[in-house]
Image 1: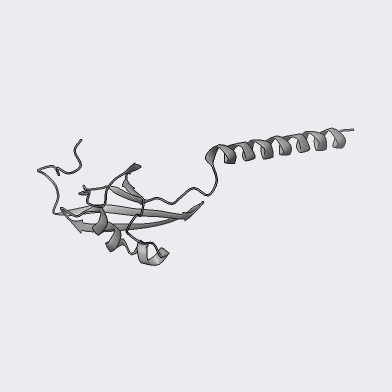
Image 2: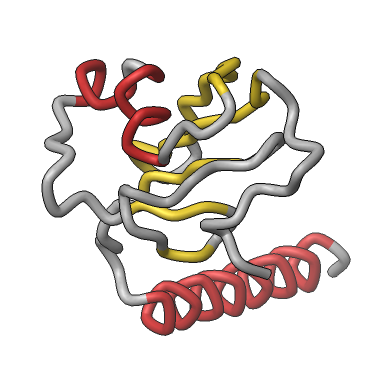
Length: 118
């Protein structure tokens, strides 16, 4: 599937969504209607997300549908443009911390249940 070659039945206006998660659990999403032939960079500029979050276009990690793409990528109807942010915690470490918290919580519940039934 070549992203640079829009289909011959491409609509005159593209429905595109631009998404940015500034922090865990927060999502800023903007739905746009752009002319056919619009690029990823044009969608980012039209969304207003760069200004709203103080982001610089140069060197910004972006993609379409979970795949990193260059700013010159031509968009298709119903594409989801994503602005990526660096991870603040290693995913493996985060899972490890959640596991230990879960185990600690389970142990406390079992001890609590054992003392209340006696």
